[in-house]
Length: 181
Image 1 (cartoon, helix red, strand yellow):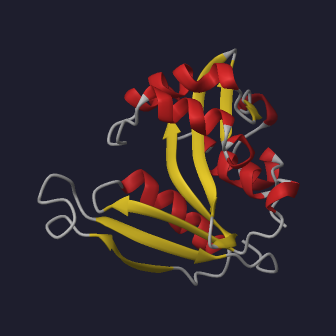
Image 2 (tube, one colour):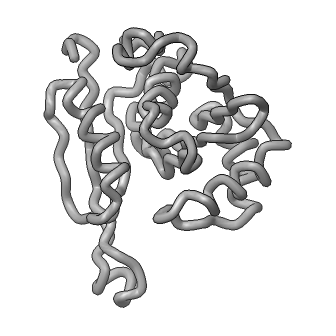
């Protein structure tokens, strides 16, 4: 199983670099999540109501990161209804002043190490072609698990979005907890 120990996950960082508190979100976090996502272009903003639902109904598959009481990171995810061994990562939001510190990968590892998600053997997400931060994050996860991921078009810019949104590529990553990174 993946470790969430910062000195193992991020060997170039020290304990003093890791001042984040990672936890499940609560009802009172919905507005804070909404405000964070608004600062995290190119992410699509959802309604405040959606962010409250994520923080309440999907709290067991979401991660909130705080630093000195400020919301600096959030991952929203859910177990797919027809495939409960698959986790769909909806969004990864990292405050601009936290980027480059490994927070996104740390949140992802923390999420995947939760006991309630021990049955997860596939991670899926969708990424637009230009979202280099997300590509780097999920390629890192893929490398950690043997580079078996597959990419395909999930929603096409023209066919599904009438040219109003970039194509979303599905990145499907089988998890192998026997692979060394």
